[in-house]
Image (cartoon, rainbow, N blue to C red; front, side, top):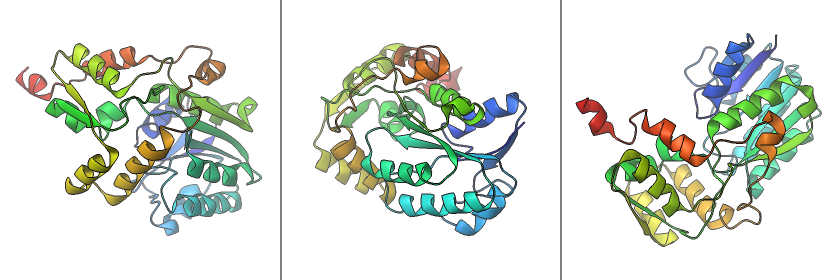
Length: 279
């Protein structure tokens, strides 16, 4: 059994990686601010204790590898992991993000075994992240209505990450993970409205107006920067509207479709909080 550090072990993909590894009997250390030992990206002094005794590391960076400061953090962590005797790194990256690819190069040239997991936009962004509040309010306004995204489920990302951590045949590989089909924002909202039985409208807005709204709403500065970057660069990136076969390549099965995610998520009540309270 391996000793594995999961950085971001309470996050969207990290918590699922932890669950899967623990079920398989591995010794898992959760890398988070509230863990013991703690791991805090903003406090490099916490990194050494979290890395001590670990064979492998699953790396997620918050909020995204594209944000300023991420490259320096990945460089520092990789050097420290090498000194700590870590043998393998699995890095969660973003599909179509040039800045994230610079972070990937640090891991690739570290001298350690590695796997890069480039993920498309998460389906769970509509139930666990910044798209949830407008869905609950019944009115979603977003830029780039024409963009088609092959949303990927975090269950599939976690399954691929676990395979990459445990099987050496994935060493040196770069996987680009997507769902099985392309969806526009309006199509996504329509599917959520249908499965939840609610009326949810969609309105296209200019990116500049959307960013101003986020700033006025008090959204943290790094998240505003990231959303601006994603909408102005990543959605238009060449190849980001391409469905890949890498989930099936690694797992031997097709990736989860958005409709399956929507049905599963509806059962949690997250899109119908008032109905859940009433029951």
